[in-house]
Amino acid sequence: MSTPASTPHTEHAEHAGVAARARALTKAYGSGETTVLALDAVDVDIARQRFTAVMGPSGSGKSTLMHTLAGLDSVSAGQVWLGDTEITGLKERELTQLRRDRIGFMFQSFNLIPTLNARENITLPMDIAGKRPDAEWLEHIIDTLGLRDRLGHRPAQLSGGQQQRVACARALASRPELIFADEPTGNLDSRAGLEVLGFLREAVDSLGQTVVMVTHDPGAAAHSDLVLFLADGRIVDEMARPTAEGVLERMKRFDVLHGAASDAADGADPAGGTTAAAAPLASDPGVPPTDPLAKPTRDDPSPQD
Ligand SMILES: Nc1ncnc2c1ncn2[C@@H]1O[C@H](COP(=O)(O)OP(=O)(O)O)[C@@H](O)[C@H]1O
Ligand SMILES: [Mg+2]
Image 1: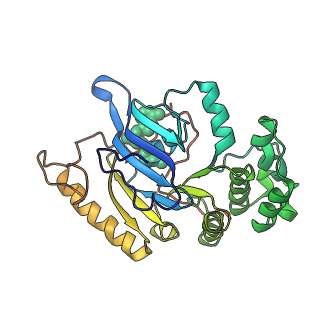
Image 2 (image 1 turned 45 degrees about the horizontal axis):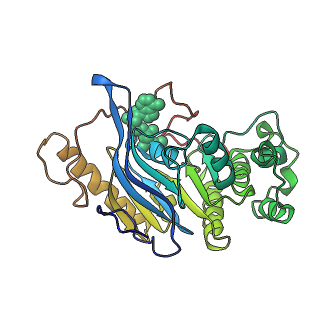
C-alpha cells in the first residue's frame, strides 16, 4: 500500500487491507450561488472485514459518501477505489457491472419490489446479472435471517423488520465484497433493529464481509468497529471500538463545537481533529427532489414492525 501525503482515516486499515478508498473525494450539487458542497475533499480508507459506522448531523454528507463510494453517484473531484479498482472514471456500464458483482446496498426504505415475493426480491440482483446464487449460501442466509417461512410473501405482507431482513439477504446473496447500509435500522423498532445489526456484525465476524453503515443511533454505532464522524462534508473525527455512551458524548461535543464554530470564520478546528474549521456551508438538511435514489425522510424513525 502506498503512503498518501494526507492523513486518511484508516485506523484499522492494516488489518486485512482496504475494501474501499477515497482521496480528495469532493461532491458538489448545483452551481453558482446555490452550490452545496456535500463532500469536501474527503480522504478515507474503509478497512476490509470490518464494520464501519458513519455518523453526523443531517445534511453532513453521509449518504453522499456512501453513494459515491459505492459508485451510485458521480464525484465532482477526487478518486474512489474499490479494492484495487479505481471506479472514478469508469464508464456507466462497467460501473453497473462492478456494483452488481462487488457491492450490496441496504437502504432505510428497504427498496423492495412490491410485486415480487421475498425470495424473488432476494435473488433479483443476481437474476438481472444472469447469475445463479450459491444455493447453500442462499439457504444459510435465509435461515440465519429467519426468513424461511416468509419467502412466498410480498413486501406488503411483511413487517418492517422482515422487509429489512429481506433487503439484508438481498445485499448478502451475491457475497459482495462490500455492503453499504444507509440507516438500515432507521425504520425499525429496536428489537428488529437489533436483529439486523446482529446480522451485519455476524456478516463481518463469521463471513468475512465488509460493512459500512450510516446511522443516527449511538446504540447502533456501538455494534461497529470504527465510527467516522462527518460534519459539513468532512470527516472530523473517528472512534475505534465505540460504545454507545462514548459515541453520544462525542456527538454532544460536536454539537457544541460545531455550533460555536459556524459563525467564527477563522475559528478553531471544530473537532480538535484532522481538518480545518468547517467552511460555512448551506445547511439545508432536506433531500432535494432530484435525488437519484429514493430516500425517505430522516431523523424520524417510525417503528412499523
Ligand atoms: N441530489 C441532490 N441535489 C442537491 N443537493 C443534494 C442532493 N443530495 C444531497 N444534497 C445535499 O448535500 C448535502 C449532503 O446530503 P446527504 O449526503 O444526503 O446528507 P446526510 O445523508 O448526512 O443527511 C445536503 O446539504 C443535501 O441537501
Ligand atoms: Mg442520508
